[in-house]
Image (cartoon, rainbow, N blue to C red):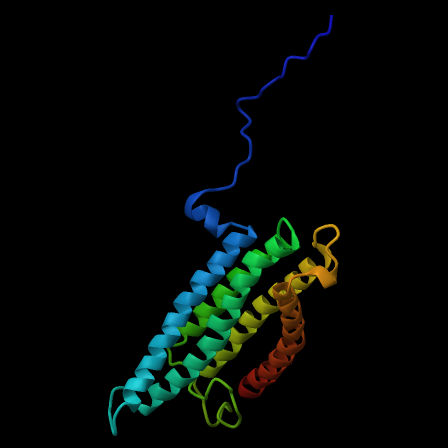
Length: 232
């Protein structure tokens, strides 16, 4: 006679489950959810940049209007450009990268899920830091940051310092994401999918990630020297 062991259950030991609700979104490492977080945040920041652009257009809609002062206009010009490049276009791209890349190459997730979550929350921190600089007076030297407008003698306020530090934080987030996508595309492809079989969208992300790795350290070095010149 064949006997089968009776399964033993432990009702007091619960099977681990993913958090639900708002806590699930705050602690998620799922690439789709992180992509959605990137997309929603980038869209909200895009709207804020649109408001800044609208105020500038209203000021320019007629001669000698006094909707905003000259100082505020320069701040709007600088913050609008920075917002659209670093807080809207780049994170919106990261939203599509996160959501689509693992699906296209047949991966369960990105190579480093926790680094992926870190990149989003770092991006959000840098974005909030940049926007909160409006409280003490935002930077007014243009989003391109040309000298001598960014020097301490020409611009002694704290707006440019906030701008520099927030760009450093945003650069860390972008570098973490770029590194993650490169490793994911190289190492996480489905069996049999060579690089020549990778979809064109994934190839474009692969090239873009390498460009980010090459460009952002140069930007980080330049603005670090600018911060040093201003404060030391």
